[in-house]
Length: 62
Image 1 (cartoon, one colour):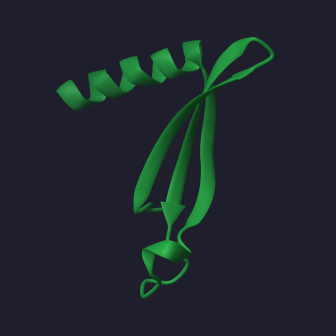
Image 2 (cartoon, rainbow, N blue to C red):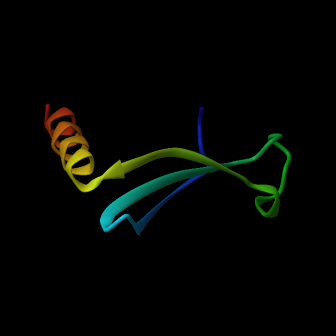
């Protein structure tokens, strides 16, 4: 899925910090930005976020 915007948020759950990644998209190409729909892409623990960061960094430097 292709997103028009991506939003990152940090929250706590059961004493653990969770990184939420949400995507916003238009249901139809002609939709206005006020009609964006939110789609939760993924919730990550700090360790998972660090692993993703390391892997993305490696991919982007190749």
